Image 1 (cartoon, rainbow, N blue to C red):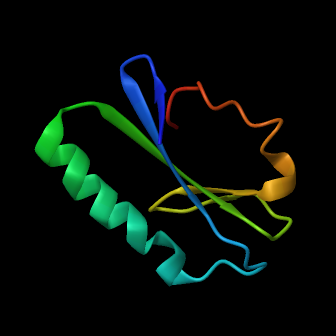
Image 2 (image 1 turned 45 degrees about the horizontal axis):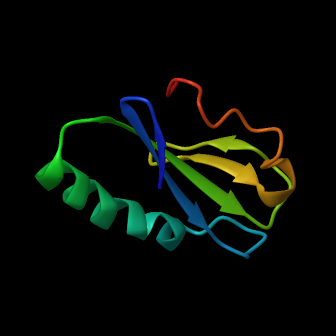
Length: 77
C-alpha cells in the first residue's frame, strides 16, 4: 500500500506473465479492511510479469518493466 495525500494505492504483485482472475482476490480483502478503518479514495494496481498494460474493472494492470515510469501519485481514472 502507498499513501498519496488523501488517497491509498493498493498494489499487488504477481510473477505470472498472463493475468488470471485470482490475481485480484487480495484486493477484495484489502477493500474490506480499508472500508472498516477509514474512508479514503482507493486505487488498485496489479503489477505482473507480462508486457501489456491493461485497464480492468478490479484494478489497473501494469507490467513490472513499467513500474519506474508509472505515475503512482496520479488520481484514479
